[in-house]
Amino acid sequence: MAKIGVQAMMLKDSVAEIGAFETLRKVDAIGYHAVEISQIAMTPANVAELDRARVELGMDIAALSVALETPEGVPGDSLHRDFDKIVQDAKLLDVNLLRIGMLPLGALRSVDAIVGFAQRANEYAERLRAEGIDLYYHNHHVEFAKTGGRYLLDVIADNSPAMGLELDVHWVQRGGLDPVRTIDKYAGRTAMIHLKDYRIGELSPAAFDLLQRGDIAAFMTEFKNVVQFAEVGEGNLDFASIIEHAQSAGAKYLLVEQDELYGRTVWQSLQTSYDNLLALGAGDLF
Image (cartoon, rainbow, N blue to C red; front, top):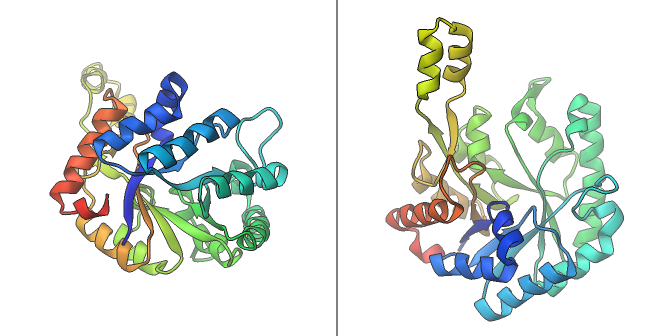
């Protein structure tokens, strides 16, 4: 049975303010008991607080985020530079899943660069597998561009057979595909799925001011950019089917995430998603 948790990108400001342990205490109080670590520095202090949350709160550290390489001076652990530390942190926190959160932007320059990224990732996936740890790749919408009639995500998957996929249902939808059919397509290869909704927002008063002034081009820019990230159940995605198919596909974790909050607090957002998931009958997955 899959477990619903939180993607900690949403928690980074809270961690900076009150620390990882107190942040995860608040997550636990809402009703989430699993977390995927992302955009939180894996300093000795933060690792110790994550371990404390695991022991004292029973928080399941679902996965850690890594990159193949990070430029000097840029925070974040890289498999190239920090392989042994990453493995050590994962074993301390009882984690056997790592995830690469984004394709290196420079790799989008060409298909050959994407293939090179996937092949390097596969080498690390094989090394990690020898340590009892699996590596996954998280999609955005750009991986659903086509080359030679094939999606870039399939180019990545075909060139990294040892690496699994972490599907993000909002980005799948934004890429023009059906999340449920996409989950089915990659069944058996997807251990983690990001749950965030896809909402068509309202045009702002400023947009209508542009229209009234006759600035049609600027109004049409607003018109075309009304897609929003949304709390689970507050948009257009069929989460009852998504959750059902995710479990059938073998997903271990379903991780609530929202990239932008549109004036709400992270705690309001997480509470709304939690309440809507309960209403969907997913309470036994927390």
